[in-house]
Image (cartoon, rainbow, N blue to C red; front, side, top):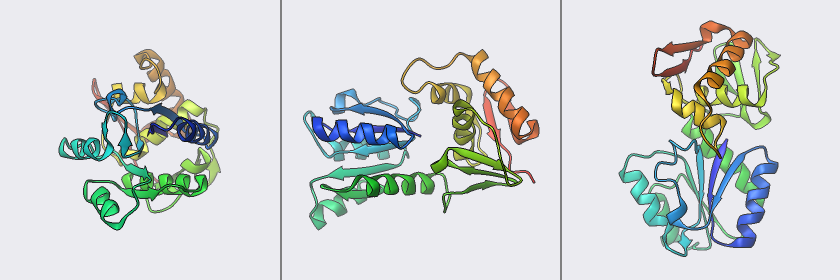
Length: 220
């Protein structure tokens, strides 16, 4: 999962960035509101850790702009602003969860997994799609109970399709997902990874809308 970390504190931001990478996530760390991608979802971001006190603006204002623009990316607020009034303001502005500093990293990671599950409409660490089951916390997938030998990119691709819940995922979003911190993957390379994934899970499980994108079928 690509996590956008918006935290201006150098020591805390560096520690959280390392913790996210150690937990198996991709992480993009920025320290100012001005450095935040205007469309996080188009940049492949799947969840946001948002500090409210930024040097060039309010994290709460940024969150409100996202929600008013219809950007539904899951957001976990991390802040020292911990009064009841401040927490309610954050949740009413559209935060999916609110964590007050100081906090323990394992709790942060658990809350991050929880908001990601809710966003993907999953209620547990196992994401079932018919006979196919994803386990994002372990970066693996099972088919009919057998663990699939997927490469990291193949699993990222499968997870991106699963998170869409059967909806079509545009090709450019999938390409960006596989290269979240750089240029989007070339279409030929994306098609190669899709071909390999289809071979391993069954070609009929990945539908194609020609020229647009792909979706995941929940098949027995």
